[in-house]
Image (tube, rainbow, N blue to C red; front, side):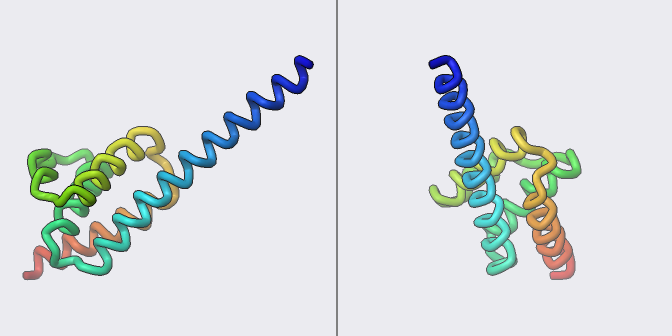
Length: 109
């Protein structure tokens, strides 16, 4: 009986961790795709600046996220949540790279 309860708790914990990883991957991947697809778009620029600020710990004007539409605003909040929970997630490196390219592109124009 006790063994089955332990396995059930373990299975539920594993399931919750897997759901959290899937959620994290979706937010990071969605942001990366948006930034890469439309680097000139204001939403992509704001998300890129947010990512750069989180990674480099520089200033970010938080009121800029209010310029985002509802879906991108929610995406920004999910990025903040995910970043806090998992600062060393591998998808973050790809997202940071995309954000850095957008930042360099913006400086050139």
